[in-house]
Each structure stands twice: as C-alpha cells, then as structure tokens.
Length: 71
Image (cartoon, rainbow, N blue to C red; front, side, top):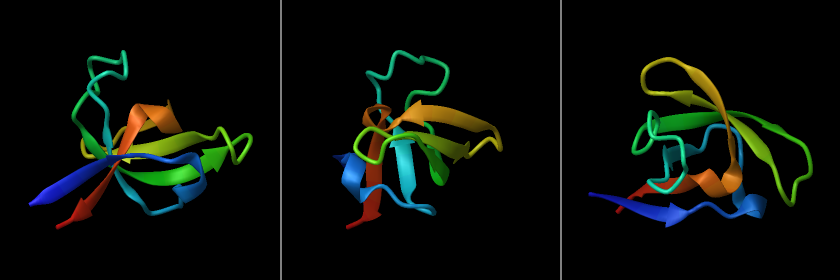
C-alpha cells in the first residue's frame, strides 16, 4: 500500500518519488507517478523537474505534487 502526503518545499530532494496531485490543473498528468530529477529557484518555493512514468520530463511547482512512500 502506498501513502500519499502533500509535498513540503523543505523536504524535496533529488530521487524522491512523487505523484502529480489531482488538483494540479494539469489534467494530462494528474495521478501520474515520477521521480524528482532537479530543483530550481528559491528553496522555500521550488520548481521541480520530474521524470514521469511515461518517460517525459516535466516541470512542476512543489505544491502540485504529493510525496509517495511505502506503508
């Protein structure tokens, strides 16, 4: 079982497993899983490069993602 938690800016790190939030206003990506590959901008309000499960690399704001971890 996987638990989803809102992503907190200060907890973001490379290699973190994430899920695109359902309210992200990017309907083509909602619910997709990926891995953080890069971080840009202010550490308190980062934009994150995420390698999605379909192989695409997309840029998201931290609040558009959920942290995913094993239960």
